[in-house]
Image (cartoon, rainbow, N blue to C red):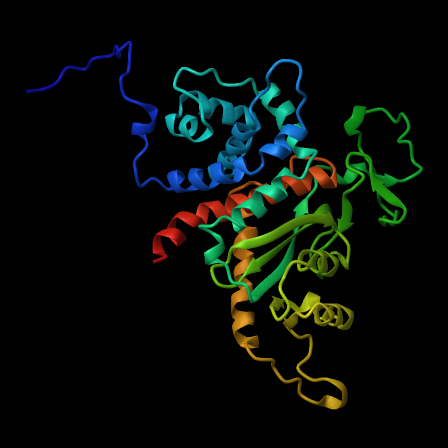
Length: 356
């Protein structure tokens, strides 16, 4: 018998929101880990909120919503609020009931900016990798490091002389600019839109652009990120950030990297910390054309270190960090680090399922 095409729905629903999410859905595993991490950050959340006034959006719900934005490539906060309004899976993950009202996008952004001012993202990433279910997946002896460029939210027109007030040349704030014959350098020029952005190019034949430099440290067993950060784009930023991020590595660990890190001072600094450098070499021969011997495990490190590009590819394409939406190095750092934490989370369900 053919059923009728009924248009009107039921006034009440007697199915719990928890029952609408399949038992084997990957977000269930992710939410359990995220909830444990956020419980450990209660003291940090209390420190950035006042004890008086009206209650704002719970910071735990803010973090879950921002993680969803990275998981599903939601390009704006306004679109995120639209998804939360009708998507029951998103409501369940964030912690909203079926009848709870979704926040205004402007209010959501203002509350999100409070989290951007403190290092909550770094603590979320650290909480994930130290979680009892995740820590057993990580290698304690073999790591890799690399950097990538993040395009700044600033146009080349804003890159002017530091003592140039712009003047009133007409044409509004986006007036035409003629840079022909002008040699622009970071020493003499700065962006009026984002002073922290630097003019930089990754290599020969590639365009120079206003950007930041993102960094990550990866453990080599499963390719999970154990550290992340953003610095101003300079020729030495990759090595300086790497030395800062490997401070917590245990002596005896190995660190793989590409040829940009094959600098004598950097290798000596690693050895002083008890870390064995497994760096791609600019030359296979040393002084007197003597072949450089490979340390134990060098070939394996060189194979595994390339997986760090998978982290950057996901963060820049899926999580939308190829061009940042924020201004200021600290805010860009917070958004990038949270996207790296989201990459770890999105891979955990399959990794944990495969573990005995």
